[in-house]
Amino acid sequence: MLLCGAEVHRVEDTLCRMGRAVGAEKVNAFVITSSMVLTLTFADGQNLTETRRITTSPSNAFDRLERYNAISRHFCRQPVPAGELHEQILQVQAQTPDQPWRDYVGSMVAAGPLAVFFGGTVIDGIFAALFGNLIALASRHFRKYCPNTVTFNFLLCFALGILICLCGRVMPFLHIDKIMIGDIMLVIPGIAVTISVRDVLVGDTISGALRLLESVLWAAGIVYGFMLAIRIAG
Image (cartoon, rainbow, N blue to C red):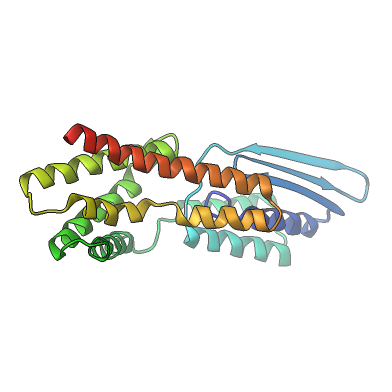
């Protein structure tokens, strides 16, 4: 759930509810974006503690988050053996997103009008939509090869910036700054910033600060990727 974009408070609350569902009298859950610690205390005094290190960057897979949430709610109502629960989780992980063409269409529909909104021409909007399609393609197929989101955004924006600048050289009537602005809006970490603010407001200050710092680095990767491309392209 955390890797799908869930708030820290939601993850901790889910762990506590599931722990009480299996008979634990006391449940302590501590979750941040890079680590999870769970301790269950049973009536006989037995304590079980599990720690997990999280190295994968979170995404905004809210469809998968909804399925995980449904599994946890069903478990709280009717607990199942650990093996069966694990199988249900693996089934969700193995599922591919429904109708992936929506990512491509959504990216084009968002990037094109935004380029026009910020002062570009209709031609600029068309090119921004086409490059937005490339962003969706790269996000679906190449993100898994990058160690973290900051690196991926830097490389993506650098490659995209080079392509846009080359198109600007071949077709001088294009406004490359407006095209870049339209495409930048697709990778801006708006949701991550919103979640970080929410974490701080509900008392999860550490997680909120970590998410905010990650969002700032994420944005820096975007900026420096385009800046380097512009500098190289002259």
